[in-house]
Amino acid sequence: MKSNLKIFAILVIVTVFTFLLWKIEEGASGDLSSEVTTDFAIADTSLVTKIFIAGTDGESALLERASDTRFWTLNGKHLARKDATDLLLKTFARAEVKGAVPELQRSTVIRNFSGSGKKVEIYIGDDKLEKTWYIGTATPSHTGTYMLLETPEDGKSQEPFIVHLEGFVGFLSTRFFTNETEWRYTGVFDFPGRTLAEVKITDHESPSKSYSIKSTMDGEISLFNVSGALVDFTDTLRIQDKFLRFRKVHFESFNNHLSQSLEDSIKFTLPCFTYEVSGFDGRSAHFDVFWKSPGTGMGGPDDHNHDGEHMYGLTADGELVLVQRYVFDPLMEPLFRE
Figure (cartoon, rainbow, N blue to C red):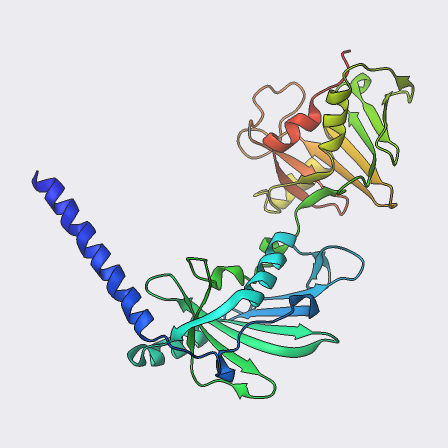
């Protein structure tokens, strides 16, 4: 009984404390929409062409809208994750000031911008700097983010504000990361709609099980064996399901946790499967996968103890990445018996 009363008392204290924090933040709010220094939002995010994020740790990320792809470029050399860039644009469009920072907290909030904040430059049109956001920490209630605005016309505001997204409970600082690996696009194959034309699967351990599937623009598919001969089939849904799985495939991570010597040894080993995928638009993609042992290193065709959750993948650019068995097991499932 005493234990239950103690837990109840703790819950009451936490609830009251959270409520008081919320009231403090709400008490600092007001109608600030007419203030230039509170106009954080970007009305039309389709005009945004470049985003530069810099952290106090020296890391930075440059995101630029590309005209020839659905993806943004990262630091001028990689594709950026579409989900992450889309989230930034939604944040730019929906950001609203929740209230002013309480007087007693202002000096601390401003000091924290220099210690752990992010600087976000937003460019539109012909790379015209539209606004700069200075992003600080979350509020104590974690329902808002301390931010400060700078514009070319009005300069840098002297007053920080609590910013949030209407209808979203949480803080915004985690959306503005700078680590290049976290930003990089992890897509292996990306052929949306009916753009996928051909899939070729080479089973290096059982070559007779290799095959290819081709599609017409109208969606009619054909199956070919390892010799390139047309194969009749009756289970149309099974062949279609296998083919369509290759429209969108991602690996898990660029971080494979391997030493350079072990990574090199895997790259020069025969993979267990090779996938070659092409689209009607002329794009093509190539990807090799290798077994992974339960520890570090790799398994093989005679190793029945290889990792049940992960494999290694080799991109067309020669990078060894980590892939999930959950994603690739269906792609490795054979269509033919030996």
